[in-house]
Length: 129
Image (cartoon, rainbow, N blue to C red):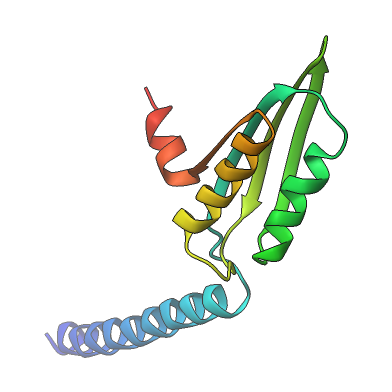
């Protein structure tokens, strides 16, 4: 009987201690994610059109203008058609996503290119089976 009471008291102490440790770990993870750039918002940018000099450079300069970091680029030229898929980190963008997307589309229209910009969350939800 005495052993049962000692176990019960230690169990309560252990559970309380475990809760405090878990709270600390959760707070630490949230702090780390917010301060280390751990939460990344991404955009997928596609460009298709007749190949001309400077397409990649211009799209990249629009990204740089708004502090959007290019994470990955895949491009190819088939015959005379330029095709590019770009993954960009929009976490630290200085403009909202709509303005960024509109500016890229405007550049595309002015240069006979089809440029589509899609938030990664929408892209992923559209391509899940």
